Length: 301
Image 1 (cartoon, helix red, strand yellow):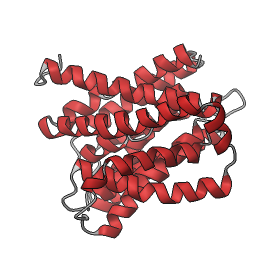
Image 2: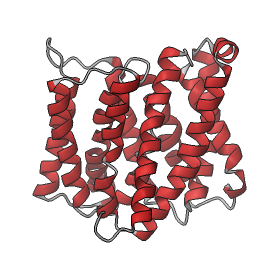
Image 3: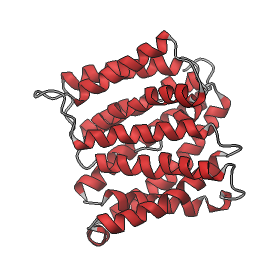
C-alpha cells in the first residue's frame, strides 16, 4: 500500500486507472474496427457529458473566455486528436507517447506561469522525450506516422489547457466538466458534419457498440472516474498520486497486447521503461501545475 494512502483509496485509484486504460482500448476498437468516425465519436461523447453536467454550467467561472479556451484544449482539441490518432496507432504506443504531456506541461508552466526547472526535472524531461522517440522509431529511421503526430499534438493541447486552467478562478471539478462538454460539442459536431462520412453507417451496423462506448467514455470515464480522481487529489499530495497513475499506461499496454494484439517487442519495452522513468522523475518534483495536469491528461483515451 502506498505510504499515507488508505487501502480503500488505493483500491479506488487502481480501479480508476483500469477504467482509463480500458477506455483507450475500447476507443481503438470502436474507431479502427467498427469504423466510428473519430470526430463524430468525440462529439457524441461530449454531448452526453454536456447534458449530464448541465446543472453545474452556471454561474460561469471567470474569466469566461479562458474557461472556453481551456475546455476546447483539454476536451475537444485533445480528444479529437487522440481519437484521430487511434485510427492508425496501437493503444500501447499511444499510452507511451502521450506521456509527453507531462514534460510539455512542465515547460509550458515555466513559460506561462514563471515556474523554474531544476536539473532533476530537466533529466526527467529528457528521458521522457528519449523514450517516446524510441517508441516512434522504425528501421528506416525516425519517421513518425501521422497517427503518432496526432498523439503528440493531443498531448500538447491537453498540457496547454492544464497550464491555462491554473488561471481560471473557482471552477469546481463538476463545473469544469460541464464547460469542457459544452465548449467541445459544437465545434466537433460541425467539423464531423463537414469533413467526415460514415456516421449513418456506424449507427446502422454498430449502434449498440457505439452507444455503449459513448456512454462508458462519457459517464464512467469522464463524469465518474475523473470526479473521483479529483477527490483523491483533494485528499492526497499530487506527488503521491502522480507516480501511481503510471498504472494507466502499463495497464493500457497490457490490454492492448491482449485485446488488439499490439506488438510489444524490445524497442517498445526499452522506450516504455525510459519514458515512464522520466515521467516519474518529473512527477516527483513538486509543481503547481501537476494537479490539473494529473486530472487532465486522463481526459484523453
